[in-house]
Length: 401
Ligand SMILES: [Zn+2]
Ligand SMILES: [Zn+2]
Image (cartoon, rainbow, N blue to C red; front, side, top):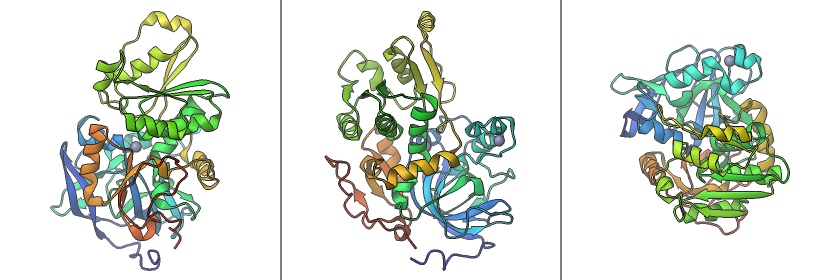
Protein backbone atom coordinates (compact mmCIF):
# COMPACT_ATOMS: atom_id res chain seq x y z
CA UNK A 1 0.00 0.00 0.00
CA UNK A 2 1.53 3.26 -1.11
CA UNK A 3 -1.28 5.72 -0.59
CA UNK A 4 0.67 7.80 1.88
CA UNK A 5 4.04 7.92 0.14
CA UNK A 6 2.44 8.85 -3.16
CA UNK A 7 0.00 11.33 -1.65
CA UNK A 8 -0.20 14.70 -3.40
CA UNK A 9 1.37 17.59 -1.55
CA UNK A 10 -0.64 19.36 1.09
CA UNK A 11 -0.75 22.58 -0.93
CA UNK A 12 -2.02 21.02 -4.18
CA UNK A 13 -5.56 21.43 -5.48
CA UNK A 14 -6.78 17.98 -6.52
CA UNK A 15 -9.25 16.96 -9.15
CA UNK A 16 -11.26 13.93 -8.14
CA UNK A 17 -14.49 12.05 -8.66
CA UNK A 18 -17.32 12.79 -6.29
CA UNK A 19 -21.04 12.11 -5.97
CA UNK A 20 -22.66 15.53 -6.41
CA UNK A 21 -26.24 16.51 -5.62
CA UNK A 22 -27.07 19.43 -7.93
CA UNK A 23 -30.61 19.79 -6.65
CA UNK A 24 -33.13 17.44 -5.04
CA UNK A 25 -33.42 14.33 -7.17
CA UNK A 26 -30.55 15.26 -9.50
CA UNK A 27 -27.28 13.57 -8.55
CA UNK A 28 -24.40 11.81 -10.22
CA UNK A 29 -20.66 11.36 -10.34
CA UNK A 30 -18.73 14.46 -11.38
CA UNK A 31 -15.12 15.49 -11.57
CA UNK A 32 -14.66 18.26 -9.02
CA UNK A 33 -11.71 20.15 -7.57
CA UNK A 34 -10.70 20.07 -3.92
CA UNK A 35 -8.61 22.95 -2.57
CA UNK A 36 -5.84 22.19 -0.05
CA UNK A 37 -6.54 21.97 3.68
CA UNK A 38 -6.31 25.32 5.46
CA UNK A 39 -5.24 25.90 9.06
CA UNK A 40 -6.85 23.38 11.39
CA UNK A 41 -7.93 21.10 8.54
CA UNK A 42 -6.77 17.77 7.15
CA UNK A 43 -7.16 16.02 3.83
CA UNK A 44 -8.14 12.37 3.90
CA UNK A 45 -7.91 9.79 1.16
CA UNK A 46 -11.33 8.19 1.45
CA UNK A 47 -11.31 4.40 1.67
CA UNK A 48 -15.00 3.65 2.06
CA UNK A 49 -18.26 5.36 2.90
CA UNK A 50 -21.63 4.11 4.11
CA UNK A 51 -24.87 5.18 2.44
CA UNK A 52 -27.07 6.55 5.22
CA UNK A 53 -30.68 7.64 5.40
CA UNK A 54 -29.61 11.21 6.09
CA UNK A 55 -28.01 11.28 2.62
CA UNK A 56 -31.38 10.26 1.21
CA UNK A 57 -33.08 13.08 3.13
CA UNK A 58 -30.70 15.53 1.45
CA UNK A 59 -31.35 13.99 -1.97
CA UNK A 60 -35.08 14.32 -1.43
CA UNK A 61 -34.73 17.92 -0.33
CA UNK A 62 -36.34 17.01 2.99
CA UNK A 63 -33.92 18.92 5.22
CA UNK A 64 -34.96 22.37 4.15
CA UNK A 65 -33.86 24.84 1.47
CA UNK A 66 -30.34 25.86 0.47
CA UNK A 67 -28.83 22.41 1.15
CA UNK A 68 -27.43 22.05 -2.38
CA UNK A 69 -25.43 21.81 -4.57
CA UNK A 70 -23.19 19.61 -2.49
CA UNK A 71 -20.95 16.57 -2.34
CA UNK A 72 -22.83 13.89 -0.42
CA UNK A 73 -21.58 11.38 2.14
CA UNK A 74 -20.88 11.70 5.87
CA UNK A 75 -20.25 8.16 7.19
CA UNK A 76 -16.76 7.15 6.15
CA UNK A 77 -13.16 6.30 6.92
CA UNK A 78 -9.82 6.80 5.25
CA UNK A 79 -6.17 7.71 5.67
CA UNK A 80 -4.86 11.21 6.37
CA UNK A 81 -2.65 12.33 3.49
CA UNK A 82 -2.09 16.04 4.24
CA UNK A 83 -2.55 18.38 7.17
CA UNK A 84 -2.96 22.16 7.31
CA UNK A 85 -1.13 24.61 9.56
CA UNK A 86 -1.38 24.07 13.28
CA UNK A 87 -2.74 20.52 13.15
CA UNK A 88 -1.22 18.30 15.83
CA UNK A 89 -3.70 15.45 15.47
CA UNK A 90 -4.38 13.46 13.35
CA UNK A 91 -1.07 13.01 11.54
CA UNK A 92 -0.32 12.02 7.96
CA UNK A 93 -0.73 8.27 7.65
CA UNK A 94 -3.25 7.97 10.48
CA UNK A 95 -6.33 5.90 9.79
CA UNK A 96 -9.38 7.99 10.67
CA UNK A 97 -13.15 7.82 10.96
CA UNK A 98 -15.05 10.95 9.94
CA UNK A 99 -17.16 12.68 12.58
CA UNK A 100 -20.00 14.79 11.26
CA UNK A 101 -19.65 17.02 14.29
CA UNK A 102 -16.30 18.76 14.68
CA UNK A 103 -16.90 20.49 18.03
CA UNK A 104 -15.52 24.00 18.55
CA UNK A 105 -14.70 23.24 22.20
CA UNK A 106 -15.66 26.71 23.45
CA UNK A 107 -19.38 27.39 22.88
CA UNK A 108 -21.80 26.95 25.84
CA UNK A 109 -22.81 23.43 24.73
CA UNK A 110 -19.18 22.33 24.35
CA UNK A 111 -18.29 23.84 27.74
CA UNK A 112 -21.22 21.94 29.26
CA UNK A 113 -19.76 18.71 27.87
CA UNK A 114 -22.50 18.28 25.26
CA UNK A 115 -20.28 18.43 22.25
CA UNK A 116 -22.67 16.93 19.72
CA UNK A 117 -24.84 19.98 20.39
CA UNK A 118 -21.99 22.37 19.53
CA UNK A 119 -23.77 25.40 18.03
CA UNK A 120 -21.12 26.49 15.51
CA UNK A 121 -20.63 22.89 14.35
CA UNK A 122 -24.39 22.52 13.90
CA UNK A 123 -24.61 25.71 11.85
CA UNK A 124 -21.72 24.57 9.67
CA UNK A 125 -23.39 21.22 9.11
CA UNK A 126 -26.51 22.96 7.80
CA UNK A 127 -24.54 25.39 5.66
CA UNK A 128 -22.18 22.68 4.39
CA UNK A 129 -19.03 24.68 5.08
CA UNK A 130 -15.81 24.16 7.04
CA UNK A 131 -14.80 26.07 10.19
CA UNK A 132 -13.89 29.31 8.41
CA UNK A 133 -17.29 29.41 6.73
CA UNK A 134 -16.07 28.45 3.25
CA UNK A 135 -15.94 25.38 1.01
CA UNK A 136 -12.93 23.64 -0.56
CA UNK A 137 -15.09 22.05 -3.25
CA UNK A 138 -15.71 23.44 -6.74
CA UNK A 139 -17.50 21.80 -9.67
CA UNK A 140 -15.93 21.77 -13.14
CA UNK A 141 -18.33 24.55 -14.20
CA UNK A 142 -17.07 26.76 -11.38
CA UNK A 143 -20.01 26.22 -9.02
CA UNK A 144 -19.06 26.16 -5.35
CA UNK A 145 -20.23 22.91 -3.75
CA UNK A 146 -21.17 22.41 -0.11
CA UNK A 147 -19.51 19.76 2.04
CA UNK A 148 -22.39 17.41 2.93
CA UNK A 149 -22.73 17.49 6.75
CA UNK A 150 -19.20 19.03 6.69
CA UNK A 151 -17.74 15.68 5.59
CA UNK A 152 -18.51 15.10 1.86
CA UNK A 153 -16.93 11.66 1.74
CA UNK A 154 -18.69 10.26 -1.35
CA UNK A 155 -15.49 11.40 -3.03
CA UNK A 156 -11.95 10.19 -3.50
CA UNK A 157 -10.62 12.75 -1.01
CA UNK A 158 -12.16 14.89 1.70
CA UNK A 159 -10.93 18.02 3.47
CA UNK A 160 -12.40 18.23 6.96
CA UNK A 161 -11.70 19.94 10.27
CA UNK A 162 -8.99 18.10 12.18
CA UNK A 163 -11.54 17.52 14.96
CA UNK A 164 -13.75 15.78 12.40
CA UNK A 165 -11.20 13.04 11.66
CA UNK A 166 -10.81 10.72 14.64
CA UNK A 167 -7.79 8.36 14.60
CA UNK A 168 -8.38 4.62 14.98
CA UNK A 169 -5.98 1.65 15.15
CA UNK A 170 -4.81 0.33 11.80
CA UNK A 171 -6.05 -3.22 12.26
CA UNK A 172 -9.73 -2.34 11.82
CA UNK A 173 -10.57 -2.74 8.10
CA UNK A 174 -11.54 0.70 6.84
CA UNK A 175 -14.62 -0.56 4.95
CA UNK A 176 -16.01 -1.63 8.32
CA UNK A 177 -14.66 1.36 10.24
CA UNK A 178 -16.68 3.58 7.89
CA UNK A 179 -19.83 2.43 9.71
CA UNK A 180 -18.55 3.69 13.04
CA UNK A 181 -18.82 7.35 12.06
CA UNK A 182 -22.61 7.56 11.84
CA UNK A 183 -24.72 4.42 12.28
CA UNK A 184 -22.69 2.81 15.08
CA UNK A 185 -21.96 5.99 17.02
CA UNK A 186 -25.61 7.06 16.77
CA UNK A 187 -27.07 3.68 17.73
CA UNK A 188 -24.72 2.90 20.60
CA UNK A 189 -24.89 6.44 21.96
CA UNK A 190 -28.69 6.36 21.91
CA UNK A 191 -28.66 3.19 24.01
CA UNK A 192 -25.87 3.98 26.44
CA UNK A 193 -25.86 7.79 26.70
CA UNK A 194 -29.49 8.75 26.02
CA UNK A 195 -31.67 5.76 27.04
CA UNK A 196 -29.08 4.51 29.57
CA UNK A 197 -30.34 0.96 29.15
CA UNK A 198 -29.73 -1.15 32.24
CA UNK A 199 -29.28 -4.89 32.71
CA UNK A 200 -32.49 -6.81 32.17
CA UNK A 201 -34.49 -3.91 30.76
CA UNK A 202 -36.94 -4.34 27.91
CA UNK A 203 -36.07 -2.52 24.71
CA UNK A 204 -38.23 -2.10 21.61
CA UNK A 205 -36.50 -0.98 18.42
CA UNK A 206 -38.88 0.51 15.87
CA UNK A 207 -37.23 0.47 12.46
CA UNK A 208 -34.36 -1.92 11.76
CA UNK A 209 -32.37 0.09 9.23
CA UNK A 210 -28.72 1.07 9.51
CA UNK A 211 -29.04 2.74 12.91
CA UNK A 212 -31.67 0.34 14.25
CA UNK A 213 -29.28 -2.60 13.71
CA UNK A 214 -26.67 -0.86 15.84
CA UNK A 215 -29.26 -0.03 18.50
CA UNK A 216 -30.02 -3.75 18.74
CA UNK A 217 -26.34 -4.66 19.09
CA UNK A 218 -25.87 -1.94 21.69
CA UNK A 219 -28.89 -3.09 23.69
CA UNK A 220 -27.57 -6.66 23.65
CA UNK A 221 -24.11 -5.58 24.82
CA UNK A 222 -25.70 -3.34 27.50
CA UNK A 223 -27.47 -6.40 28.92
CA UNK A 224 -31.04 -5.69 27.90
CA UNK A 225 -33.34 -8.60 28.76
CA UNK A 226 -35.89 -8.44 25.97
CA UNK A 227 -35.11 -6.79 22.66
CA UNK A 228 -38.12 -6.49 20.36
CA UNK A 229 -37.35 -5.57 16.76
CA UNK A 230 -40.15 -3.97 14.73
CA UNK A 231 -39.96 -3.56 10.98
CA UNK A 232 -42.07 -4.19 7.92
CA UNK A 233 -39.51 -6.27 6.03
CA UNK A 234 -38.78 -9.91 6.78
CA UNK A 235 -35.11 -9.71 5.73
CA UNK A 236 -34.49 -6.87 8.16
CA UNK A 237 -36.17 -8.75 10.98
CA UNK A 238 -34.01 -11.77 10.19
CA UNK A 239 -30.91 -9.60 10.38
CA UNK A 240 -32.19 -8.11 13.62
CA UNK A 241 -32.58 -11.56 15.20
CA UNK A 242 -29.05 -12.48 14.09
CA UNK A 243 -27.82 -9.30 15.75
CA UNK A 244 -29.35 -9.99 19.13
CA UNK A 245 -33.06 -9.17 19.00
CA UNK A 246 -35.03 -11.66 21.08
CA UNK A 247 -38.37 -11.03 19.33
CA UNK A 248 -39.33 -9.82 15.88
CA UNK A 249 -42.61 -8.04 15.08
CA UNK A 250 -43.68 -7.67 11.48
CA UNK A 251 -45.30 -4.24 11.45
CA UNK A 252 -46.91 -4.90 8.07
CA UNK A 253 -48.97 -7.77 9.48
CA UNK A 254 -50.85 -6.24 12.41
CA UNK A 255 -52.82 -3.15 13.34
CA UNK A 256 -49.87 -0.90 12.71
CA UNK A 257 -49.77 -2.07 9.10
CA UNK A 258 -51.35 0.80 7.26
CA UNK A 259 -49.40 3.40 9.15
CA UNK A 260 -46.06 1.69 9.14
CA UNK A 261 -46.20 0.79 5.46
CA UNK A 262 -45.77 4.47 4.70
CA UNK A 263 -42.79 4.85 7.01
CA UNK A 264 -39.34 6.09 6.53
CA UNK A 265 -36.81 6.37 9.36
CA UNK A 266 -37.46 9.09 11.88
CA UNK A 267 -40.94 9.90 10.61
CA UNK A 268 -43.68 11.07 12.97
CA UNK A 269 -45.53 7.76 12.64
CA UNK A 270 -42.45 5.84 13.82
CA UNK A 271 -42.11 8.16 16.77
CA UNK A 272 -45.76 7.74 17.71
CA UNK A 273 -45.45 3.96 17.39
CA UNK A 274 -42.45 4.01 19.73
CA UNK A 275 -44.45 6.09 22.21
CA UNK A 276 -47.38 3.70 22.06
CA UNK A 277 -45.16 0.72 22.93
CA UNK A 278 -43.97 2.33 26.18
CA UNK A 279 -44.93 0.96 29.55
CA UNK A 280 -45.51 3.53 32.34
CA UNK A 281 -42.15 5.08 33.22
CA UNK A 282 -40.65 4.11 29.87
CA UNK A 283 -38.61 6.37 27.63
CA UNK A 284 -38.75 6.62 23.85
CA UNK A 285 -35.50 7.81 22.29
CA UNK A 286 -35.71 9.25 18.80
CA UNK A 287 -32.61 9.03 16.62
CA UNK A 288 -32.10 10.09 13.06
CA UNK A 289 -33.28 13.11 11.12
CA UNK A 290 -36.96 13.74 10.59
CA UNK A 291 -38.00 15.71 7.52
CA UNK A 292 -38.08 19.47 8.15
CA UNK A 293 -41.52 20.58 9.33
CA UNK A 294 -42.65 17.13 10.52
CA UNK A 295 -44.66 17.23 13.76
CA UNK A 296 -45.66 14.57 16.28
CA UNK A 297 -48.79 14.53 18.39
CA UNK A 298 -49.17 12.52 21.61
CA UNK A 299 -52.03 11.87 24.03
CA UNK A 300 -51.09 14.33 26.76
CA UNK A 301 -52.80 12.29 29.49
CA UNK A 302 -50.12 9.62 29.10
CA UNK A 303 -47.46 12.01 30.37
CA UNK A 304 -49.04 11.39 33.74
CA UNK A 305 -47.69 7.84 33.64
CA UNK A 306 -44.19 9.32 33.41
CA UNK A 307 -43.60 8.24 29.87
CA UNK A 308 -40.83 10.27 28.27
CA UNK A 309 -39.91 11.17 24.72
CA UNK A 310 -36.37 12.41 24.17
CA UNK A 311 -34.11 12.96 21.21
CA UNK A 312 -30.59 11.69 20.75
CA UNK A 313 -28.29 13.31 18.25
CA UNK A 314 -25.20 11.51 17.05
CA UNK A 315 -24.72 9.45 20.19
CA UNK A 316 -25.30 12.22 22.73
CA UNK A 317 -21.63 12.37 23.75
CA UNK A 318 -18.31 13.56 22.35
CA UNK A 319 -17.65 11.29 19.34
CA UNK A 320 -13.91 11.40 20.01
CA UNK A 321 -14.54 10.02 23.52
CA UNK A 322 -16.99 7.33 22.42
CA UNK A 323 -15.23 6.02 19.34
CA UNK A 324 -12.22 4.33 21.01
CA UNK A 325 -14.54 2.16 23.11
CA UNK A 326 -16.53 1.15 20.05
CA UNK A 327 -13.31 0.29 18.24
CA UNK A 328 -12.33 -1.97 21.13
CA UNK A 329 -15.68 -3.75 20.90
CA UNK A 330 -14.96 -4.36 17.21
CA UNK A 331 -11.39 -5.55 17.78
CA UNK A 332 -12.44 -7.93 20.52
CA UNK A 333 -15.12 -9.44 18.29
CA UNK A 334 -18.01 -8.42 20.55
CA UNK A 335 -19.31 -5.91 18.00
CA UNK A 336 -19.55 -7.41 14.54
CA UNK A 337 -19.92 -4.90 11.71
CA UNK A 338 -19.77 -6.86 8.46
CA UNK A 339 -23.13 -8.53 9.15
CA UNK A 340 -25.13 -5.34 8.63
CA UNK A 341 -23.62 -4.77 5.19
CA UNK A 342 -25.58 -6.14 2.25
CA UNK A 343 -23.89 -4.40 -0.68
CA UNK A 344 -20.37 -3.27 -1.50
CA UNK A 345 -20.39 -0.87 -4.45
CA UNK A 346 -18.37 1.65 -6.41
CA UNK A 347 -18.71 5.42 -6.11
CA UNK A 348 -20.69 5.61 -9.36
CA UNK A 349 -23.36 3.26 -8.03
CA UNK A 350 -24.34 5.43 -5.05
CA UNK A 351 -27.56 6.68 -6.74
CA UNK A 352 -28.72 3.03 -7.01
CA UNK A 353 -27.91 2.49 -3.34
CA UNK A 354 -30.00 5.52 -2.41
CA UNK A 355 -32.88 4.06 -4.44
CA UNK A 356 -32.58 0.80 -2.45
CA UNK A 357 -32.64 2.82 0.76
CA UNK A 358 -35.75 4.67 -0.41
CA UNK A 359 -37.43 1.33 -1.15
CA UNK A 360 -36.28 -0.08 2.20
CA UNK A 361 -34.34 -2.90 0.53
CA UNK A 362 -31.27 -4.64 1.94
CA UNK A 363 -28.94 -3.70 4.77
CA UNK A 364 -26.20 -1.10 4.78
CA UNK A 365 -24.48 -0.31 1.49
CA UNK A 366 -20.80 0.57 1.62
CA UNK A 367 -19.27 2.46 -1.27
CA UNK A 368 -15.70 1.23 -1.55
CA UNK A 369 -14.00 4.33 -2.90
CA UNK A 370 -10.40 3.04 -2.79
CA UNK A 371 -10.25 -0.76 -2.67
CA UNK A 372 -6.48 -0.57 -2.23
CA UNK A 373 -6.83 0.78 1.30
CA UNK A 374 -10.37 -0.28 2.25
CA UNK A 375 -9.31 -3.79 3.23
CA UNK A 376 -11.66 -5.59 0.84
CA UNK A 377 -11.00 -7.38 -2.40
CA UNK A 378 -14.31 -7.93 -4.17
CA UNK A 379 -17.34 -5.71 -4.62
CA UNK A 380 -20.89 -6.89 -5.06
CA UNK A 381 -23.81 -8.14 -3.05
CA UNK A 382 -22.95 -9.54 0.35
CA UNK A 383 -24.90 -12.75 0.91
CA UNK A 384 -26.96 -12.91 4.09
CA UNK A 385 -25.02 -14.88 6.66
CA UNK A 386 -26.88 -17.08 9.11
CA UNK A 387 -24.14 -16.48 11.64
CA UNK A 388 -22.98 -12.87 11.60
CA UNK A 389 -19.53 -13.95 12.74
CA UNK A 390 -18.89 -15.75 9.47
CA UNK A 391 -16.52 -13.73 7.32
CA UNK A 392 -17.79 -11.68 4.39
CA UNK A 393 -16.61 -13.20 1.10
CA UNK A 394 -13.69 -11.23 -0.27
CA UNK A 395 -13.07 -9.37 2.97
CA UNK A 396 -9.59 -9.26 4.39
CA UNK A 397 -8.09 -7.94 7.58
CA UNK A 398 -6.05 -5.54 5.47
CA UNK A 399 -6.05 -1.79 5.36
CA UNK A 400 -2.61 -1.52 6.88
CA UNK A 401 -0.19 0.51 4.77
ZN1 LIG B 1 -25.77 9.08 8.79
ZN1 LIG C 1 -18.94 24.19 20.45
